[in-house]
Length: 166
Image (cartoon, rainbow, N blue to C red; front, side, top):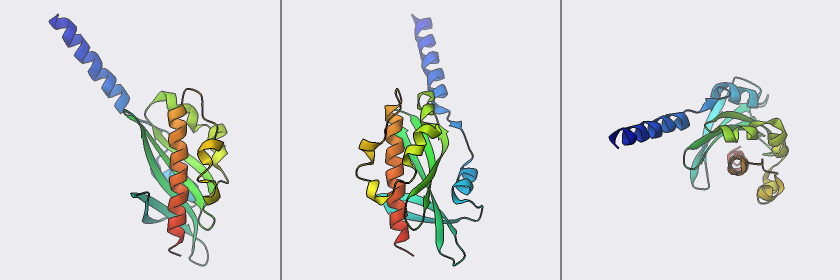
């Protein structure tokens, strides 16, 4: 019986270690640079739905923000982490692209494919309320699909909030 308990505890420990390690698909700095189209980034923080959102932005020739990259993180309970960098146009707050930085659960990996992420391109403030009903989820990754939609909504709202400052 004692050996059985030891084996069970060891198995649970190994499973925890396996689940706690995220797969990094792209370095954060690289994802931000690609979303902005430059390595010259400026950083700001805005509040969205009671939470702080980190906004990186590039400036155009007139010194005004041109492109925005919003870092979003999500957890599919109990411990599946997701991190995205959502690239948006600074003026319109429309999505230009999404970079997947990391995910810790293999079942979420299909949501990093361009066939799924391209559904968000061109979406902006007018799409926020209806976005959940218009995006097709990935089979067997519904939770991760919904987290991506939430991340995009928050990124649009963060960009809209950020744009008020210029």
